[in-house]
Figure 1: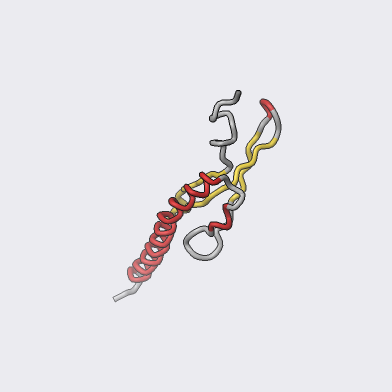
Figure 2 (figure 1 turned 135 degrees about the horizontal axis):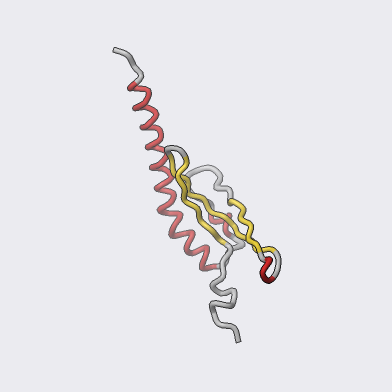
Length: 104
């Protein structure tokens, strides 16, 4: 008999990457797929495209397990706010830079 850990009940295919790129932060979801068998098993990740706006559409996660969709729903609410703030801060940074370049 398999334990819950060994079963697919808690095994997911979703990944999250948060990274700093230049002066910004990127928050993206990935779908992970496993290929091969035994010791030659390898994971490949494919970025899930966000689309327009600050949040991922729930439709992008239809193939995921229910617990993954639930987690994405909770996290994307916060991540959407963060993405919007990151964009606004970027605009402010560019405006301050332009302001500094004005000669008296």
